[in-house]
Image 1 (cartoon, rainbow, N blue to C red):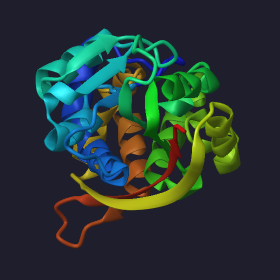
Image 2: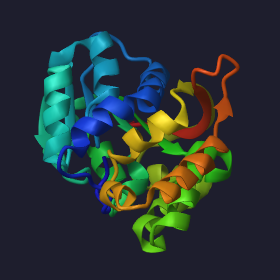
Image 3: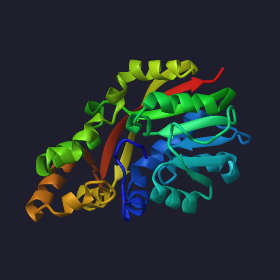
Length: 266
């Protein structure tokens, strides 16, 4: 997770691990595939959350070569238990790693949450060995992410706008678009910076089942629980419009798009 205020508490970390894995784990596997890991590389997962990216990396390099850092101790506890990796409660701009001690840094959906993305990118560059590489994934604009946009629209309509307003600034636009991300990595000292856009279609359970479970893993879980039955049904109806109903009537399919930015330490 990130550091700008989108933090979960209570049992939300366990809920996040259980529910969000449906769409975050496919993206984690995709990011690790883009990283082209080899078995002898040491990997740092920044803003590791409950360890989706870490476990995909562990499958290639082993648990003893992956470390996850995050500011949320509850997320880290889940990550450690699930993946077996070393975890550290550290911010993205102060990981505690030695200069040039990491082969690959991965960060899934964290950069846009950091209070100082520039400082985090600089820290990533500092940690990388010569020739090491860093990959950041960030959501594309929400016009290309109807599933995420649907959540925001539905919650803004039925909760106070302040409860979810900050969530609108959690995609690549918050970083100045793709050009802004490219400059950010270059200013941090990374070279051969390249951005690519990726789209995944992810099968999910019916929204009536899935969305209440998903919302329980967010900072506005209690506000959603306080809605009336009719208001909650209205939210579910809005979410149904953000996904494709599967022909087998057993679930839905969410189309999601992310930008992956990669750079190298020279």
